[in-house]
Length: 134
Image (cartoon, rainbow, N blue to C red; front, top):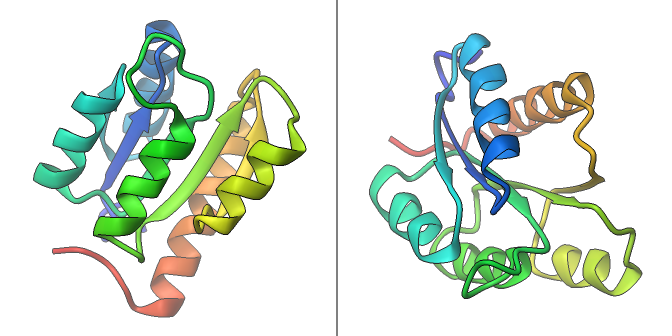
């Protein structure tokens, strides 16, 4: 499936987490882009049009947090599968993300087998909908 749905954007202001996530996903055959702050994230999103975005909710080093990035992504693209990550289980953030169309919300620290499962779920959902970018 990875060859059909190649592009994933990982947005996290913790560089070590972003790099580790990219390495794990690349080993599974995905083309992965990382952004450590919101401006880079939105630039990459415009240019690469990923099918899946993995967004950290809390990004104090960034102009926008993950919720605001999700909001901008949804303005541009309603079909991109978005997985939200957070260290904190905050009901208001979860609700905001869901209201903006986040597909999944999971807590850090990242459990990589679980993340791979979420990415596979995303691929299945995209395949079922028949919606993917070029």
